[in-house]
Amino acid sequence: MKPEKIKVNRTLEGNIFEIVFLVLLIAVWVFIILALKKAPDVVPTHFDAVGHATSYDSKYSILFVTIFTSIGGIIMLGSAYYPHTINIPVKVKTPRQYLLAIRMMRVLSLTLLALTATIAYTSLVAGTHGEPSAIPILAIVGVMFAVIVIFNVLIYKAS
Image (cartoon, rainbow, N blue to C red):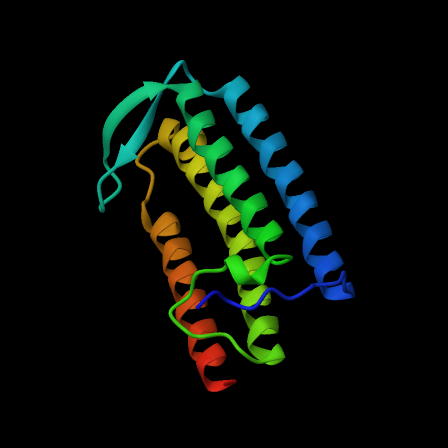
């Protein structure tokens, strides 16, 4: 059985999320461009759990990750207007459930931008000034996981 397609109209909440996302996206990319100019030609690109660099590559290799996660954030934000495409382990039937699923995608899009900035910072800045820590990246991934779990519980309880 296919999920019900519902029309999602623009709301103040949606507009605020989109404006915040756009401002943060621009800020993240400005930071990345400025950091690329100052970074050495070879930067650490992979770290173990302790924070020791285990792989090095061109400073421009970070662009692949940041482009990919930026596009992912845009897709997540856009999926809020097509909630029937959101794949979650809970059957969404009520308007409240749709609202929560939409909000979850908007929050996840912002956390994905935070992850993008943290990865770029770790490789381009912290990695060139000593031993960086993997803790900020792991913390943001943990926040993303918590957002998914909490919203899925809320969606389930809203049925």
